Length: 366
Image 1 (cartoon, rainbow, N blue to C red):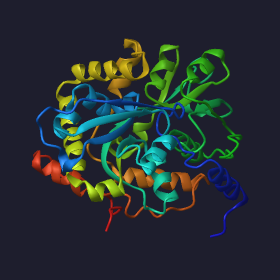
Image 2: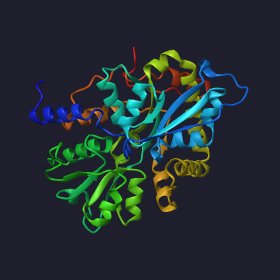
Image 3: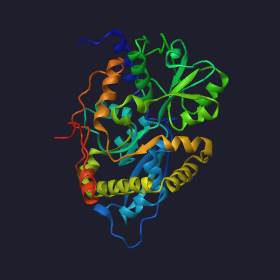
Image 4: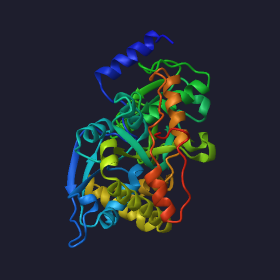
């Protein structure tokens, strides 16, 4: 099918700005590197000196935050050092994966899809889920009192083509309203605003609300905003992928035991989070403080933590649906995502842990 003018313009933008779509809470492109201490006397996994793990310093990457703080990854890697790099944006993490600066990473669905497509399906595999939920439409209650009132208002999303931007554009379309995806202009003004400045934009009145992930959503509520819609309510079983675990295909092929060790730590961390929610919340916030220099206040941390659900299941069918929404919005040509998942290592770990296996929605590697 020939591309429309709008789609051609969008593809030109994507070509000029590789991997445009940010992960769920992308705040920039810098990465911070940190190294843990290997366990003295323990054997090295796959003979590796280190495994390099990437993640974002925010709550949608709770598994990585808590797992690191509780030394879960290092315990499973034994004599192999767990090295960490924290990122602020999906594109920089994908670039790090491609260059070998990291081996495994926690990341949102949009950059995972973009990274896979841009490489012709050759750079990464999604090997696990990590989190569901944690995205809300928060509005100024004095300006917006119902969903129909969103029409004509200025609503922020993190960035053109990112996970929340696509979700909001799809919701707008389902209301029967029209918006040009590139410019954000139409029946609703979609204002692409970096999550870290969205609360200030809200306080100044330059936006009337925002479709954003946690903890930005709870920061807006703390400023007097009201949750008008929880995106989870739009999905079957109220579940949709917000964070995945990806790995370099070369690393997966060459070091399967190391991949299994990281996945085992991830599964054990998620189980610990579910059994110890208060301790896990404190651990996540402590790691946030270590990574960003600033913990979240209780009035933001508590509601944000409650809205995020950790999960080993990558919720593969929802990833495919999110890609379809991007196609519908004119931001993506119809992709072939067959092969984006390799869940065999995860299912091996889950079986050993006595947990049920998960499904790849027929998007697994053959």
